[in-house]
Image (cartoon, rainbow, N blue to C red; front, side):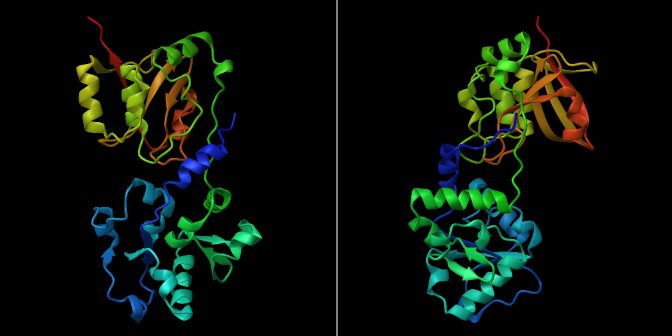
Length: 296
């Protein structure tokens, strides 16, 4: 089955769109308009280091990979773009469109009445924080659908609960995730490591957080998990996909060639079930470590 977001998901995700201001991105060819030259301008490295307030996990999801294509970025308070003259706005918008900044959406993907209410930049409409804040629910859902289409958001496949073998189905229920699997988080942040920690603890309520490898590794050791030399996982094993010394991803093995995972920290990356014999396709250029609970 393909996991697709419901309108309720899209509505929740629309609340992740930043509405306190706008991020603008620039490369070496960009010319900063005089009207905003005094705004704070930070290098891409400084933004990644969290030196820009408007760069939380949800903001990263909305702006996608724009920062990776940029040399620097700046934050404009809400309404600033609307206060600029048309030529300045147009030049700024063109710079954003050239870098593929997702807040500029192809007009063809938006309903005509909505297009009429937004700033036009060539074949794009600019979804500014000021504009998005004013939109009603229907228009916000339309924007989210267009945003997902333009950014080619990947819809993951999974296995319906009813089609699971008895063993994996029972284990999924035992750890409390039978109602969570094949669905999405409402916010960005919850990631693979939080999902696995919650699965090991049997408490899905703790999955709604961001976790990195060091505390997860400590948690697993405290629960009696150790690396095993076995190449064949057993139910309740934790699969750790390594690239060198870095843990790139983790998953919880359910048995019968199936594992449970959340493949990323963005709100559009769902909790799902994948086949173990596909792990090299899903996580190329990684090696697999299997962690197993050693019961006394």
